[in-house]
Image 1 (cartoon, rainbow, N blue to C red):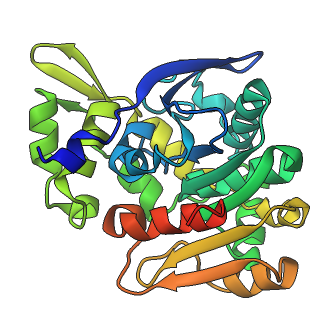
Image 2 (cartoon, rainbow, N blue to C red):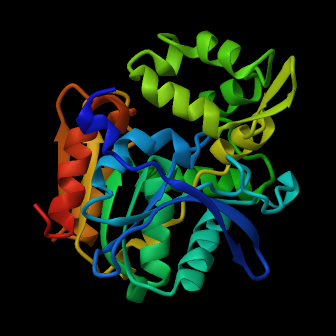
Length: 300
């Protein structure tokens, strides 16, 4: 370990109890009270610890809280599949967390985490100083209307992501075996090993010497994909803080007219495509994400 790496602070595991909603595990990087607060939310199936190497180098500029969302990581909030009827569950969770924190913050998130951060900023604009949305899931309005109909008739559409998640292997002999099974494969092919290790350590429970299970159950991950928010366009106009979106060149969740719809509703937002990036942009271009967070907070 070099001197620079040894100076990067490790986060502290803590929890936030939200009345009526449950207990949410968080990672926090503390600092002087005059530093701005940054709250970060992870993607579907991931966890706060996945993004440790992205966020830790920012700990000299921000106080940081990264949240394990309901059904993910080490959060203990109830996770009844029948109650997960849409991403508003996650949005309301984050509003509750921010209400308990009771301090305006810069908000950022990856994939679903970006959408959830957007929901919070729309629901409690007084608590949002700025948004950096990294590959947010913003379903085009035309697709959203079709999805809404499928939900209304009780037959929600299952995407390939939902079907794949339901089939995901949930049990391994150890965290080491889990890590080995992911490295260089599938969705993890472009991830540096440190991100994969943090994903495994923050997203698995060791049950016994020969049994380790995913913290986010495949059925929960699958249902989350199925219930992806199609109502976000009703809320987007309520966001009042400075906002920037980073989206990928390939396999992006910003598709089919989403960008033009955003520009019509929020013409002052900045939207940037990152050349060479896939949906896993934070893992592929962490320095770019950090630069944008510092710019958002006026710290660069």
